[in-house]
Length: 122
Image (cartoon, rainbow, N blue to C red; front, side):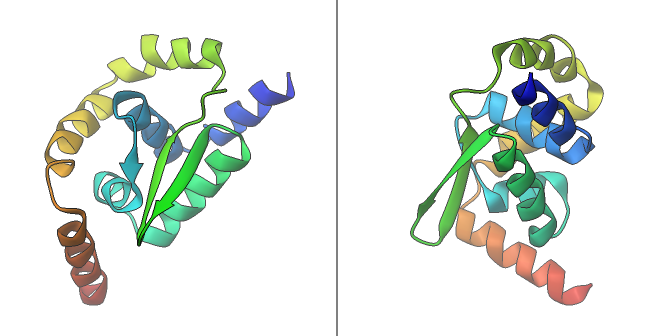
């Protein structure tokens, strides 16, 4: 029961739900790709990912300067089915899906440069 409560608490923020939905569609995503999709600052995305990791919903791996996230293999199946049957059909997730189709074709280094430039103008 604790696993389900932790997962549900992690979903209390819409952006964390969007991250999990994106990871249901893509095996793995880099932080910079998630930053681009959510259109929020990197520290904010990192905080969301940390909460998802503590809830045992996502795992990370580091490769050179990039950190990649994927769903934890122990992700609760009933919650996964609920997400697939309800959340994945929402307009916001459909928009994220389209946006990610473009984002994953971009070079990660270019995404990071673009995000840094945006950050210096804010």
